Each structure stands twice: as structure tokens, then as C-alpha cells.
Length: 425
Ligand SMILES: *Cc1c(COP(=O)(O)O)cnc(C)c1O
Image (tube, protein in one colour):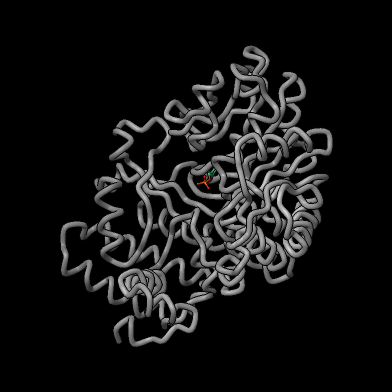
């Protein structure tokens, strides 16, 4: 069956108007259905989220905030954005929410613009140790507008050393401390970060982009009681459209709102905001709670089986949705391994590991995670099967026939797990 054999009511017009783009969207849909997707920042949204995101709300301009707009014609948009704000506040237990940031990077920028003066010091986790670019890494503009200092993980345990974090905070007196990561397989002690920040006279930003869905589900400690601001993307474990939210204490609300608009952004993407609203409604259900816990159970099962098969894991395992593998002992290079996995229909990304002896564009690690496979209903036994294929791929990186044979097995396996929102099977 080819992709175009499947009639898709949502893309019928696209097929008619722009067959070239249509063909590629359908090919991507097929790809997402037929592969085991292990990129920990990706997921499958529901069709409801996609519908709201692709709706007529994309036609609107609504600069400002509900009740205080610079455009007329907001009778529906104001109601929508207010509902989404209220859902965010209820779900995360926060005093204030701004749902307008276009994505995670501009949202972090807005927190800094709102709470700091230019030249103040940001203290964040170093990128090679799991932090995000926007936590003050060299390549990010956040390190140009503000001074940045970086804490690291411990050289032997690869865990955050809270004594060292405290020591650095008291010595350097940063204006803000950022806790959050893109490649840290363990839980954050947000309470302790909050205490350290208070002691150092710093603001505390919890960047929960990767783990927001786990927090909502009660599968990871919640920073809301301790943080001045909580930033999350909406498209990772939270399973919404691509966007972000900033949540904060009432005392910071005005500064944060002004930083987002008119400080950094123009018209908010109300179509995305509506999609976020749908995702937040879905995230408030008992099914989502179960989903969050299953993500972690699956990650632990995947980690255990990989270890059993001789893979080295950073910190030895995981508490959350992701596993960071050190491939040195397996004698494969991250980039080559990720490419071979993709050929075998398993999608992951090569990643720097802490104190990596190799260069960032060809590092020693591979980063995998379970949000997407868990959305498809895969369980612990399925993780063991995936680990077995990953092991076979590592042994056959250069054997294209072997990789193609595994790819066929993976494709057949995926047929047992319908992907939400998809119209191909
Ligand atoms: C993904 C992520 C971001 C940035 O989000 P984008 O939407 O890609 O800009 C920021 N911080 C953390 C911890 C992230 O994981």
C-alpha cells in the first residue's frame, strides 16, 4: 500500500492544491507510524489537538491579553485564551500563567527579560551535562545579554552535586538559578534548588519542558511550590502542539506578561493556544496520570534490558522518561549508531555525554526516551523487544541487509500499536 492510497479528509484540499507538500506530509505520517520513535522530546498529539491547532484561529490577530487587546474582534479569542490560562493554573497549581510564548527558547528569554537586568548573572546546567542552550550556553544569545555561569554534574556519579551548586551560588551570587534539562536521566530536587536560590538571593526558574507531563501525572517532583517561575514547552511529555507557557507567582506576573508582549513577541498564535487548551484538558484525566507513570515504567524497563545487554548508561539507569547511553564500551560512535538505528526504523538522536572525550558533532552518546512509544500503548515487554533490536543494530552497524531485516520486523511490530491522530495503518 502506498501513502496516497489512503484518503485523508483533513488533507484532501492540500492534496488538491499542493500535491508536492501533500505527498511529503503523508510520507512523514507513514514514517511516524512505521517507526519506533525514541526521541525523548517528541510525542504524538491527539487528532483533537491537531484539529484545534489547524483551525480558523490561525486567521486571527490578538495582540495583548484577554480583556486588554489592541485589536477588535476578540469575542471568541478572549474566551479561549482565558479558558487555557485557567486550565494551566489548575493543572500546575500556580498563581499565574502566560500561554502566549511561541516556543520554549523565547519563553526562557522572556523570563530573563522580565526578571533580570541586562548583564545580570544566569546560573544554569552546562549544555554538555544536560542543560539547554537557553540556560546560558555559549552559543545562545542568553550568554551574550547576560553573564552566565554553569554548574555541572559530578565526574563519577554524573548526578547533580547539590553541595557544589550551593557553593557556586553563594560564591557567585547569580540573579537567577535555572534547574531543568534536556538530557538528565534523574529527578531534580526542586525543593533543594529553591532553598539554595533563596539563600543566595537569586530567583529560581524551573524549566520543566521535558518532564511537564510527568509532573502533572505525579511521576516527578513538582517545582511549583518552590519556583519563582516555571517554564514548560507544551509539545514534549505534555503532548500538545508546539508552544510554551510561563507560570509564576502573582508578584512576577506583570513583569513576565510585559516581557512576552510587548517585550519580545507580537500577535499570539491563538490556534496553538487553543491546541494547548485541548492538551491541558486531556492531561487532567486519570488516563494521562496512568500515561505519565507508564512512561517512567517503560524507561526503567528499557534501561534495565539495555544494561543487561552490556550497554553503559549514564547514572546507571533512569528516574524519568529518558536514558542516556555511553556507547564507548560497545565500540560504536553515536552518530553512526543513530543512523543505523534509523535505517532499522528506530529513531533516536546522538548526544553528548558528560565529560565526553569526543566532539559535539560526533559525540559518544545516544539519547532515547519513552514518551512516544508509551502514547502508542507499548508496555515493559515491548521495551525489552526494542532493546533487543537496539543491541542487534549495534552489532550490525555496517550490515545493511541485517538493518533492513530489523527494519521489517520493527515495521510489523509497530502495526500492533495504533498511533493517535494518524490516518495510515
Ligand atoms: C525543548 C527545551 C527548550 C526549548 O524549547 P524549543 O521549543 O525547542 O525552543 C528549553 N528548555 C528545555 C529544558 C527544553 O527541553
